[in-house]
Image 1 (cartoon, rainbow, N blue to C red):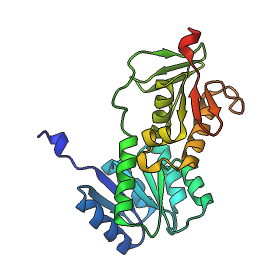
Image 2 (cartoon, one colour; image 1 turned 60 degrees about the vertical axis):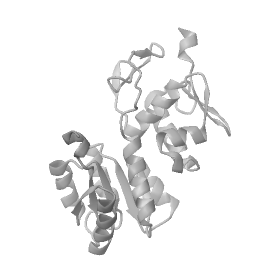
Image 3 (cartoon, rainbow, N blue to C red; image 1 turned 30 degrees about the horizontal axis):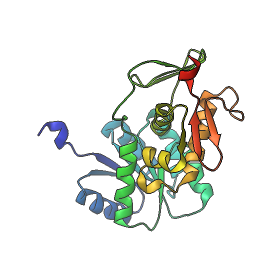
Amino acid sequence: MTSNARRRQRILVVDDEPRMIDFIRLNLEHDGFEVSQAESGLVALEQLRDQLPDLVLLDIMMPDLNGFETLKLMREISTVPVIMLTAKGEEDDRVRGLELGADDYVTKPFSPRELVSRVRAVLRRTQMPSTPMHELIEVDDRLKIDFDRREIWVEDELVKLRPTEYRLLYHLVQNAGWVVPHEQLLAKVWGYEYRDETHYLRLYINYLRQKLETDPANPVYIQTERGVGYRFIDYRRQA
């Protein structure tokens, strides 16, 4: 077995409640993860630079620097996957976290099984697709995609995509010209257990349109098939 195969994935837990940190540590270490901790947002930012974790579990309700403020600062320096931990179940909090760059959220109280499942699902989807397309894709004169280099060019400007946005675009382009059902996109990009979480899909489709389309309200590249799914323009027929 190689040293890379033996390396345990490192999870940074950011929470000001010692009992919650102990609960999370116990369950994640039981499932083979390495766990580090931070009791505040400022400490978390330092550890993010020093330890380079594979994923961050970030509580929202913290003194001084709350989870939203911490996440905003994290996104200025890193694309590390982040799962928000919150005692609130309101949709506004969930959407705000996702809009700031969180990859998922878990509402307290949660079971160990749910937590581990969410962590593994986020780690899976933020990895490189297993079968990247190697050729440069010239959708039209305006949009060019190089999945092998992980580069997206719009009007000769390099556009930065977050890992989940990248995976979503990859699966849409891989099926260009075909309608990809909501459930299939959710299962491929987020994981099978997310197949009913359509709000994730709507939000990230909107993110992609904001970055790729000339007029996001009237999209050309990513088209909606109402009630069914989404279709990426069939650029191959136009060539």
